[in-house]
Image (tube, rainbow, N blue to C red; front, side, top):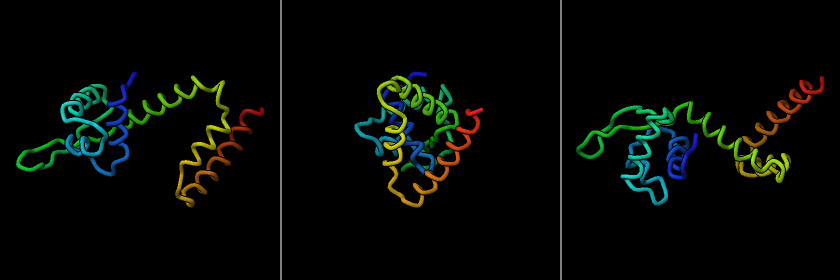
Length: 131
């Protein structure tokens, strides 16, 4: 599934939010997003089931729907990331990619846990594929 930069930005905003957001909140969270663009993007993302209406809230004197990302959207974003990675796998080695991903994490306790989880994963992966 192809996603344009605005669709990716709206999905990123929704995934990073701890709560469902109105279209106005999405506009205010993005860079150079307009209300009409966000509404058009939300219509497309709703139609493709990457976003869902999670509620209704008062926004001033009107009722506004709140939106959240779906599980499917995370799967689509993960697949897009992996597809992009496949395009460069002959240029960028896995060690460099993994180092870059781990360097993004600034929370040391969380990083320690992720490294431990990766070590377990790699040991299991190696055992599985050594047979």
